Image (cartoon, rainbow, N blue to C red; front, side, top):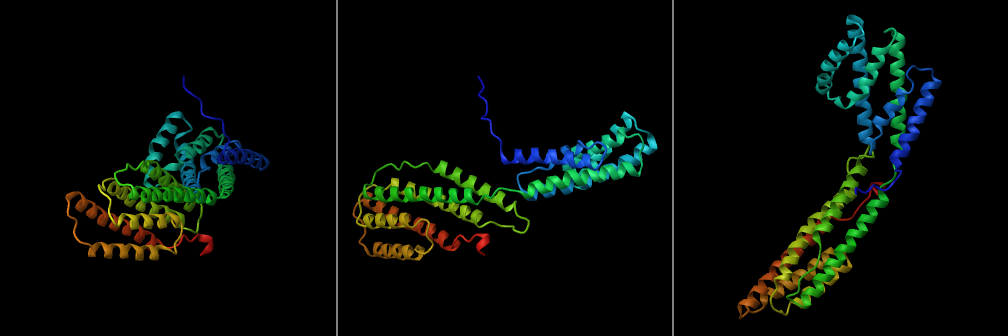
Length: 325
């Protein structure tokens, strides 16, 4: 049996309901014909972000004016017949594609039907339809100005991702002390979390008219790049075959990184510790067995991957929010 989705009234649903009611009330008080159509305009223009809403409103306003003028002329010349209506739609839809306002086709058809059903095509009809557009699209714009802040969600995702990064480095640290241990980490789930956080950060950008970037988006992008380095480090650590003198130092370095995942002030210190280990590794005598040689090579590669992780963080710098800039 197909399960039903949980019943939920979202913020967008509330805005749509309020906007429809306001549209009908205002249009009726103004004495406009077909006043209920203002509610249709509101429904079609309620979007998830302010930018998308503004784009939808402009597109619909332009296309509605086009169909109002085009339809009035054609109906006046050929009469208000169903065949003429079909011809107008046949010619108008490609025209909206040419002017890149095809998003307003459905709204335009509502206006076109008003012209089709009108007793007479005159200035009163034209003014009535323009005022309907102003009321419906205006209320939709005002409703979309009210957008919930996404900062709380973005901060939550940031903390969740940093906690998972901390857990990963703690696991790396423990595994380095006991080689030949499988690392049970779901990088796929973490990657999904980061991408979901990036999508919310991108949506936050679209909720501001004067902002074209989001520090959170760049932050999550940086974490996604680091995640690939973590995945490669996990493969290297799992392939370490024997114990080595430097494993303890690398384990301690991983533990330090785990404590400072969310900090920007300790990256240079961690890099300094990493370079010390690498210099010490270069001065050690060559291993005498194949297994220990492969382990030493893995440690060198592991240090390079960790250096890449720290370098990415160092290049990003601090997470500076728009309100702080």
